[in-house]
Length: 352
Image (cartoon, rainbow, N blue to C red; front, side, top):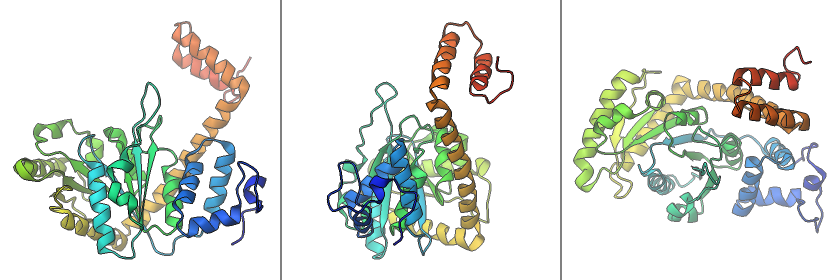
C-alpha cells in the first residue's frame, strides 16, 4: 500500500525503534487492517484531536485507506437522557451480529461533557459490556466537548475511518440534548428516535425538529407494568407524526414498541431498519442523502478550519480578548465588537 506523501516525518518513517511519539506507519497500517483495537483507538484519537500533527496523520490515514466496496449502514440513535439508548444499542448490536455472521459493528457513543469542568464520564462502554467484548464489534465513547449537536465535530471522520476498515454497520449514539440533535441527521442514513413510555402530553414538549427528521420511531421499555403506557405513547407518537412528518420517497415513518431489556419487539425493529435501508437504496434516497452530507462536510470543515486559523493568530487572539472584555464591561456593543474583530482579522474594510 502506497503511503501518502504528505505524512509528517514521524508518521512516514518505518524505523525499527522509532523515537517516542513517532509512528512506524507500515506496522501501524497492518495492525489497523488486521483488526487491532488499540490501533483503531489510536487512529480515532487522531481524528478527534485538535493538534495539528494529529490532524495531518488523520487526514493522511483516511486518504491512504481504500473506500469500502459495499455500502455501509449508518444508524443514528437519538432520544432524551434516560430513555435507554445505551441499553438499546447493546441489544441491537448483539442481535445484529448474531443474525448477520458477516456484519461488523462500530458504535460511536458521544457522552455529554460538563459545562463547568469540561470532563466526560465516558461510561457508555461500561453500559455495553457484552458488546464491547464481541470480536466483531468496537465501542468508542467520545466526549461531546462544546458541541451542541449531539455529536462531535470529528464524528464524521470517525465514521469514515471505521467504514474503510471494514465495519459494515455504524451506530452513532448521541448525548440526548433535544432539538440540536438534528445534527446527527447529517451524518447517518437512518435516524432512529427512541421515546419513553408514559410520554403522553410530553410529546408536546418534544422539539419539533427531531420529530421531522426521524426515519423510524420506537418507544423503549415496553415491558411489565410499562407495556400499556408504551403502547399509548406509540399511539400518541403516530398522531404527532401525522402533523410533523412529511412523507418522503413513499416512506411513512413507522412507530414501534420495544424492550431492550427483554428483547420484545427487537427482531421486528431490526427488520424495519433493514427495510428502510433497502427502500433508501431503491428510491435513490440513500445516494441523495450521502451526496448532501459530503457537501455539508466541506462547508463545516471549511468553517471549522477558518475559525481555528483566525483564532490561532496571536494578534487576533489578543485583540479579541480586549473586545470581549469591553463587551462584558458594557463599553462596546456586541455587534460593533464583532465588526471590530473582523476588521482586526482583515476580513472587513476600514481598519484604522
